[in-house]
Length: 190
Ligand code: ADP
Image 1 (spheres, rainbow, N blue to C red):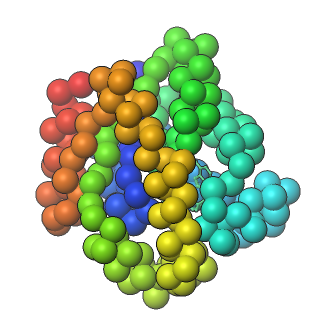
Image 2 (tube, rainbow, N blue to C red):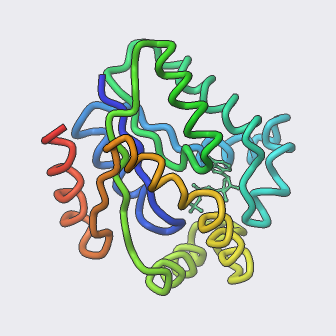
C-alpha cells in the first residue's frame, strides 16, 4: 500500500501529473476538485452546498470535504494505493486523513510538492480558463482568492509533513514529461 499526496498551489500541475502517475503506479486517483465539480454539474446536495465556495475560489468547509474524501476512499477497498490530489488542504484535513488511514492500518507514505512561482501559475490558470469552462479559472480576483486561501490555510501543511519527514519538494517548472520523471524518482525510492 502506498499513499501519495500530490501537493502544490492552484495551477501547479497536480491533475496533469496525476493522470500519468495513477497509470504508472496503479494508484486510485482522488481529486477533491474533480469530485466537487462532478457534484456541482449533477446538482447533488453536496454540489449545492459547495457551490458558492467553489465559485468564489474559497475552500469548501472541512466537515463537508473530509466526509466526501472518506466516502471516496471507502469506495475503493481493494486498491493498492491512493493518489490524493487537492486533499488535504488544511491542517484539520491532514489530521483527519492521518486518523482515518491509521484506523485502516495505512498511512500517508509521502507528500510530493510541485513548486513553482505565482506569476507562472496565474498565467497557466488564465490560459486553462479559456478552455476549461471553470468560472474560478477565468477571473483574476477569484484566482487571487485561491492563492490567499492557499497561503493562509494550505501552506502550513509543508511544515506538518516536513515534521514527519514526509515532504518531498520538486521543481514544478519544465516539460510535463520532465516533471513526471522527477516525481517518479521520488516515488521509486520510497
Ligand atoms: P485548484 O486548481 O485551485 O487546485 P481544484 O480543482 O483542486 O483547484 O479545486 C477547486 C475548488 O474545489 C477549490 O477552490 C475549492 O473550492 C474546492 N476544493 C477542492 N479541494 C478542496 C479541499 N481539500 N478542501 C476544501 N475545498 C476544496
